[in-house]
Image (cartoon, rainbow, N blue to C red; front, top):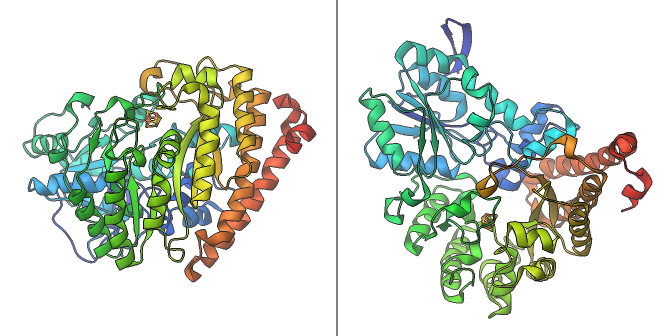
Length: 536
Ligand code: SF4
């Protein structure tokens, strides 16, 4: 139901829930993240680009359909990080709820004290949004959707009328400072940079007491919450995502995660959160960590006992609820080490896959570069415990292990790293070519200054050289070929997925044609020979 709101900016439509909740703290984000992505989180990545080949409305239906909401306008699933904030605030006794973006204007006007937003790419300045944007010259859907969300007049009317505060956080909070117009156009009160599970309670107390908030709150790594200070989620998360550890010991220079302390979530905590999802009807378990195989590890050496215990516990529930399964991220060195030391990867796969509901699963992995020279400079421990000199072999060995075990990697590599040379990029191209036989997606990312390299210059369109284009074409052809295979081999195998399967197949064929057209049209401007590049 929609009601008419009004304020200084005229009249606007506000969607009203069937029943009203008493809400002091609205926790929300725009539609691109507040979606179940048809139960396939990977599809959500399509929102990082502009709509291609179909109207934007259809594109959004493909990548971020609205989830079910209850009578109060609370979504059935929400991003895990928002669920953590909700849990922390509710445990502290606050009236705080994740609210679907459609109902945020209503609760804002009803007198909410604050709107709290978490996001991993507010203004599409992070990968892979920024490269889609650079390449197509068109504003990505996720940026447009967030801007529409934060621009709703009811939010600013609520701020004017009763002083509703706006607090923004999450891994992309830096974009509020990097995007010059952002804070002028949308004068939010406070940026929160770091793990906010604990600090959010202090912020909420200050808001209720009418105290001033600083424009920015930074939680340094050493003040990151301890395990016992991290609350359990109370409602389902998008994709059934459940965190199994935080931090990463590898120290890659382009990454900010690595600055945080390493913490393993206890098994009973992980199990409770899995059951929150499954018992509510969310039929997926997505184990989240920067490197799932390092759960309980001896620094960078995976250990069989904690991994097997974890996956046995998960498998019991997967069978009971007939749920899907995936890992979020794994490092390729850990894949190789785990398999070579006790066939741990195969043992895990035997535990969680059943050849029916779960025939295979996916994981994100980072190739980053095929150049040993660059690997030694910017990510010396990414290959550990193997030497960085072996990086390309480690990548190929790990891909072979994943393929043998029905795990499909979605890999990224970085173009435009500081001090990158033409030879480095050709080494990457060579490595991608070695990976041809392995079912996988390989996607380029343009360097974004973060972590220890945050003061360096990011990669821009003007920096694009013919060898970058060649790398992109080689990886695009690889990904298109295997995307067709993945779509037709059970990724979307349920009858209700038929329209989505068709839409994705159409999109992949369309993308293939567009890439070829683009290369032919822009060959001279890019300084490449179209026929050579397209034959690659
Ligand atoms: S392995 Fe991944 S998470 Fe860990 S430091 Fe490197 S890029 Fe970051």
